[in-house]
Image (cartoon, rainbow, N blue to C red; front, side, top):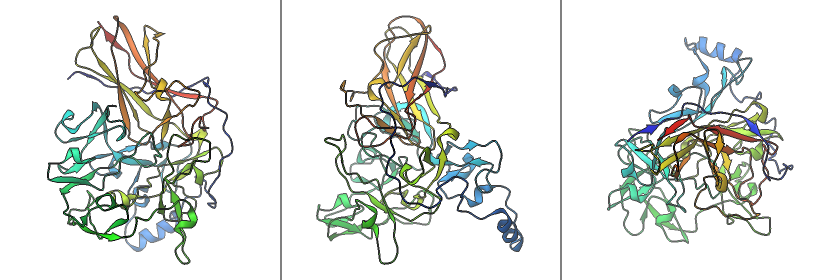
Length: 433
């Protein structure tokens, strides 16, 4: 298959198109949630500790949680480091000479709707469970039994503990594969969905991909609905407290997302799980809040708040096709390679430019609804999709996408941190004959 890879992502600003101005949102009461308030070991203490152990760290990576990185060397072999940012006066984050990015499964510039569309050793990261016809992207697979859904497994197996973020729902952490395991009999389970609605799954183990000594095992369905939280108070346990994330309650007349329960995460100081933990004009970067019963649950670490003026979103655009000729179907691939979510209008997901002139209409996802109620799709780190298009005449083409950051989720006409500007990325030019 002939593939035109993107090697250029343009970050620029242009005029906005109908998104309301940003208003003050409810913020979590987190003390000193600022990028310079790093909850790590200061350099002086580090030096003393290192000398005591006859060990002198060469860089900051030894102090980063397993989900954060400054280079690919800090991630697992099937992961890549997305969104690490340099700073003008290092060190800028504890001992780090760069703001850390996030480790996520390594995306590729190849699209898919099922696992067999990808080469051996790769897995299809579908775009949306609720919209299976929208093409996703192939990612590097951690093992032969990795999966995102039962479709990726043999008939007598099920996919357990995959984390799949639906861009049409509340979406925070990157997608992360689960494992294909033998289908559990009645009353046995790997996850709550294997049990009745008034039951939950207990004592199941599904091994993480970096734990070779682990052995997965089934659990049991127990009486009582699965726990979930709607607010922080639901996470109180004795004298300890935690935060509730990924829950949603519609406060408007109508919302595109149904009310849903979230899950509890550990309390943090000077860190964040979502933008609500940060001050105005700051966004949460490199956060990885993974829910229970996922292979990434143990990797569910908080991120840090960074000023929007210091952010450099990275969205890549590439074009895939077997024949770059007039009348042949090509695919525009759009992938978020930032360490935080980006947001796109599904009615204006891509723009085709031929010899410096834009074609009409723009490329859109199948869910596009031309109404006054604008609904964005959310791309977490490493998430991507492909839109088909057919060139109608020869020329030099480019595909462009416009996106936003820091947007509200679960509502129509969301406010965003980039209300007064739109961020743009485009593919390399390519010839159609």
